[in-house]
Image (cartoon, rainbow, N blue to C red):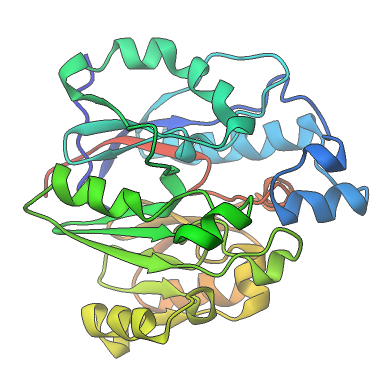
Length: 306
């Protein structure tokens, strides 16, 4: 039995779900793609092949094995892209939430059937139909739950708007002892450098008190100022538009000082090492062509109480 517990992004990881590449359906038709990064790579004939995706996930798996993490994988659904496990569900404290996703991705939860049987039913939550949320928009930071969202008009207008304002009320009621802070994100269905698909594409707290931040991903300056207020000016690691586009913020913490990052992220990897982190570098640039990176491919189930 798995008793889920996650209270931040970096306590020592013991159990997680890692996405799979098997039978992912290959390169979709342009009209079937639902994020600008995928659309750009389909148009440029650079969309990744299954073999390349598998190789990159295998490198990541080796690192997780090195740190003795228990890794679960979804059951294979033929023709379904199951790489980005993060968005299918997520854990806050001891509660597992099944995401209410866009219809294009609704099949992905079927791959979690066996995993969900290992979690006590009393700890599994189905999100109400009127609340839309994907795991990439939920960042847990001890007594704060940060949520990337789009409000009414923007949510209805953009396919890349995955979490609505109703999610803030939902989590506030579910966790009255936590502060729920919503960040309104910039969206674009067609230009990846103008789009923050999820909150973890522009914001990522790290275990030694730092946070990776892309300030221009936020619609409102007051939200950026709040991040500085919470984490402190000296702890902010800012990235630029091109780095955001490469997903510099979408690294993954195994523990408070161990971070898995893309091996080509030279600037930020060295910066993290200088700040006291152990950086495990893996190739993940092919997977990034589908609009996600290391955090997106993971769904932490248990991080130790610390």
